[in-house]
Length: 105
Image (cartoon, rainbow, N blue to C red; front, side, top):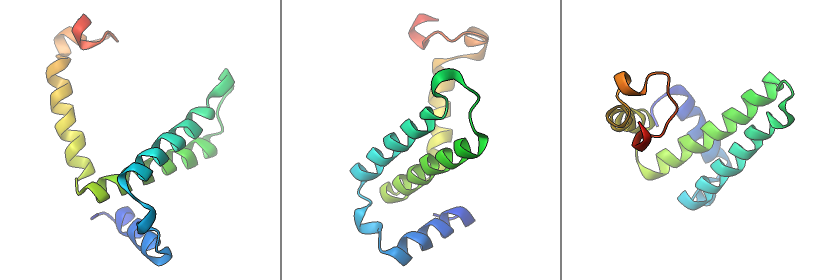
């Protein structure tokens, strides 16, 4: 982890000796749980509380950052790599303005 947020997160975890609990499986479960809590902010179609949305999004991102670190991957690089794969599946001239899956374009 190289960014200021990553370093702060690593220090936070080390101070509490929580790395022992951060197996890839546990982190993946936590991502899913926190994503559910984020989705709950939008339940029933009422306007979401922006503060709560930010907090839940931060929880999702935190666990994603921890999982990437545990797996030894650079989050920014894997996003860029995946973007290239997705770019090939969804060429702009074909996919523009459409939400169809790539095999339906």
